[in-house]
Image: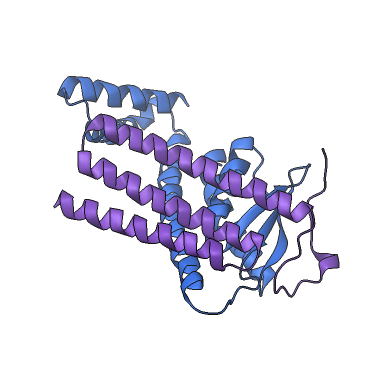
Length: 159
Length: 111
């Protein structure tokens, strides 16, 4: 967390020194600060931070891609005559433990193709998911676990 | 150039908005309707907000647009989640499913 704080400080310093208080200036300051912190890593000791920033970027990009994809898929189902959906409610075991992680996973599942999260069990071990095309629940479970949940674990819990 | 990007984004957003509304009318059951309203609604709003940010191009508008997007991404799935959960726990039957009702997992009422 302190590495992240340092990075933000460097970004702010960059913005004030270049005198362009814009989002682009802040972003380039952040990138340059990230590079600088990465370079002095031998002095400060290595940190999970660098891998987690990459994991967050990956999470955001893949998520936007999945959101666009899922909208196209649902749009196709709306426009074509007849209904092809074959819904089912399936249980997905959860490996994320933190509250933030569970929130992210459930939100991501709701916003990605053909799945909608319904409920988390009281012991936080299983997630109920409504799937629109659930001909093969096992395969669906595997994609959710290796996709969304993997990315969130990499970004939030960073091990 | 930025005019062209703005127009394309607004048009796309509008098209997706209409599609989401049509989906609400056409979809066969409550849960599938939630699919249409969550995903497509979020994408439509997002595209239009991004179009506004591109059009004005100033820092304060962009920051506000980013904030709107974040809140949208946080809240839309939660609303869908609550509605869907209420529907399933009151025992709404699934449309055209292969899953027999006895094996369908349902949320337990705790409160």
